[in-house]
Image 1 (cartoon, rainbow, N blue to C red):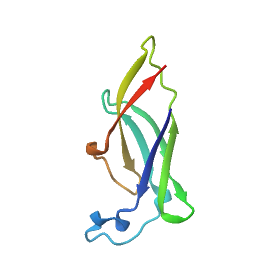
Image 2: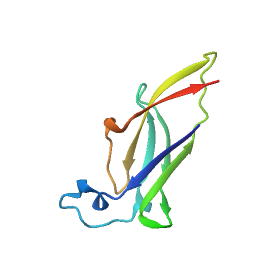
Image 3: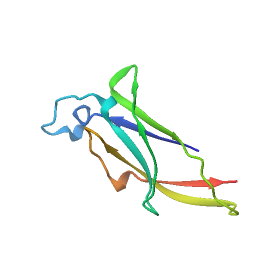
Length: 99
């Protein structure tokens, strides 16, 4: 299962407020988190969008094991760190994995 998070520098969003200085989005790190257990699934670098260097994409191929279950739902979120900060649980997603 591929997990993805699109990452934008806040200076390029309506939430910028007084933070209008665009940074280097390549400096961001993204941790994909199982919100149900609190476990970090992986921490990955952000790859810059070649068409817009202020935006990037974090991607992780999650080798999820659902045991003997035919399906299982997970609440997945992400945490942005390393020169950037974001950890907003309203952005979580429920992902259901089927065999």
